[in-house]
Image (cartoon, rainbow, N blue to C red):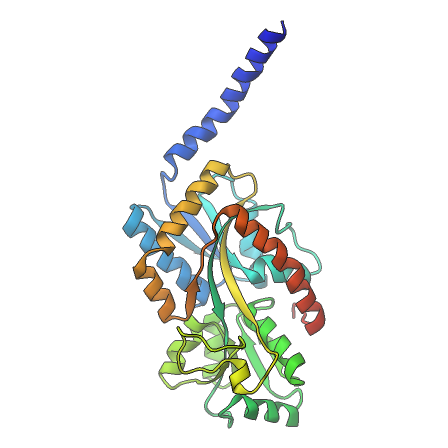
Length: 325
């Protein structure tokens, strides 16, 4: 009788697991939707569209970019959490969505660790402090002096609350002893337009947003927000070289699927992402825009990395007194 029960249980388990195994073997059979929490024209959109083009070229499959801006990428995150966990809806998020937001927002409609399955880290990046040339400052030291002489009068733009740009500005005020007011926008493109127009004279922008305008002479770069300069962003000093010791703020991008996505599907998504991001073609394109590709050794390694980032950024949010304004 016991043997019979074991056979029945084994058969039932096979019935339950077989569809998932078959699904994983054939995955992907249709385009994958890549959800981004910012509008077209920003850093996330740039990464997503380049990944999509490369995936189509290398794997003969498409990534459809779905821009869902708002609430510091929380709208995009919630959409992915509620999606069917089959690997066909994934999130391009980052340090902001999965490390900063849990501390910055009082209540999120999801748990960043329990409700997502990490796939891989995608890239590291610094942000850039630049100004509209009409603002009469040429160096970071001059900006700090002006900000101290006019507390609460200068403003800086970011692509949204909780983004690396926002956090870089909040920490800048703490380290430099200034009071530059944060003005959040819904993405890098509207943030950039506000600074180019002179409405918000200072921009703390991601490289894909700021660099083209710096190269065109429409923005004046003062410093990176990381301590050291970057080989892929020549000509712009790191914060220490620019005169602000102790200032070092960067960010990173990554990929997630909803919780309960089959491990075999996560494995395929991980392999696909590594193949796409390992292409010399995409390395060159992202490096030109100041993005340094770095993939995880495994989905588990990425999950462990996120787990250490959450308390780190919680401390940063607390010390900088940043708010989701």
